[in-house]
Length: 99
Image 1 (tube, rainbow, N blue to C red):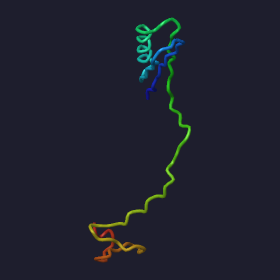
Image 2: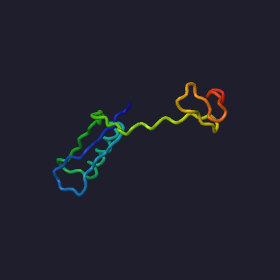
Image 3: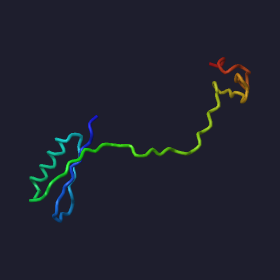
Image 4: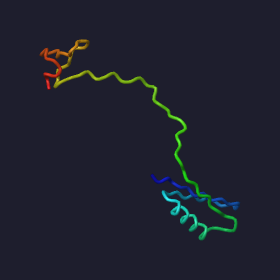
């Protein structure tokens, strides 16, 4: 798996908008940053290149109650609750006999 890279401009100048580049390879991000420095850079400007490693720091789970299981049906016949094995309310067949 390739890790994403970020290049962030470091400067002491007052500029209207900063510069940041991201990409999947370090070389690609560095090329973009060098291009910006050649076009717009001044003495003292630099880019810091970071490798972004995703580290899980927390897991948040949904605390809602689980939905009730669906009632077994075959065709349009409903089965009686609480019976073992399940029998059809209409034809009194076992659940597997409908299939």
